[in-house]
Amino acid sequence: MRDVIVIGGGAAGLAATRDLSAAGLDVLLLEARNRLGGRVHTLHESNVALPIELGPEFVHGEVEEIFRLARGTSVLIDRLPDLHHWSGRGTLRERHDFWQHIERILARAAKTPRDVPLAQFLKRARLSPQDRKLVARFVEGYHAADLEKVSSHSLASSSGDDDDDFPQFRIVTGYDSLLDLIRGGFAQEHAEVRTSTIVTRIAWRRGEVELSARTRAGAEETHRARAAVVTLPLGVLHSDAVTWDPRPRSLAAAAKLEMGNVCKIVFAFRERFWPPLTNFVHASGPDFPTWWTHAPAVVPLLTAWTGGPPAARLLDMSESQRVDRALASLARVLRVPRARIDDLLDGWWTHDWRNDPFSRGAYSYTLVGGTGAAKKLAAPVERTIIFAGEACEEEQSGTVAGAIASGRKAAALLRGK
Image (cartoon, rainbow, N blue to C red; front, side, top):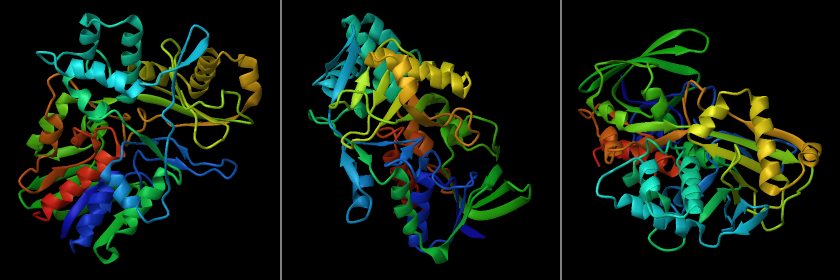
């Protein structure tokens, strides 16, 4: 019998496996995909200068979980220019206080007498029409949230820091290079990794876990351990993909958390056709209201992004339809003829996380009345079942840093620290 089985080979599962194996525990890591990384999905194309990130791309703030790992290694992290432009009335206007302005409004939402959907706050608050649009598009995009469902009290703490500086970073060597660092810390004699292994049933009692799993080849397997760290994404936890016997009580907290949707497409062009000092561009009307470059790198890459219900509607379409909608949005946002954009287009990459059976969505957000739900989900059940992942980190939900932190916390709990 193993000491611990870790279910899921994303950032949380890798972090937990590293710490547990380094402590001398016998660990089995099971991952359903044929690769590790989970929702971190980095492509290295031979004809593209920089990695293509189909999942997480940014590091939000100088978070210890990531910068401590990368310090003194070959992982290169670059700070992004704090340039945000608003597209409207045929021009691009720079917003010098983008993060601070958003934070001030969301801080007001967090102080309402009772928790309400953000849509309700925006409707009643004294805000200009442009500010309503700005905040609505930001929360849909940044939090992947439905404005009619997301908790107004949940938003301010993760949207900015106490000071006026909220830096954004990109891992230039690719997010996968960070996860490779974590895996490199496994104590190999204590850690076994199996990919293409889908867990279908978890039976447990205090001090004992028995898992049923199916390989991609169709073979049935049974694995036993004294405890399990479950890092399945919230969308999978909400589904019937895994049968529980019995259902852990902490799973009840997941009902107060929701899996958000995003639609992200990375485009490569033969040359740049946007203004030289461009990083993020925001708009209110098109299907894809947020675009970004790879600044400070000078490369002909643009990323289209939308989140929340608008993303869900786009994901109901075919990939070719989504690409067409994105290029039409780009022509509108930058005021560039569509024919010119089509002529310069060299290729694109995208991934549908909502219809991916091993994620069933992009990342989590908190529903009205759900304050504290992430902490409750992460609470150990009889020191035998512990949930981890970005949905278990209230302050860093939806981030790789949050996933790493939760995986390490789960490992520490099992090690008795």
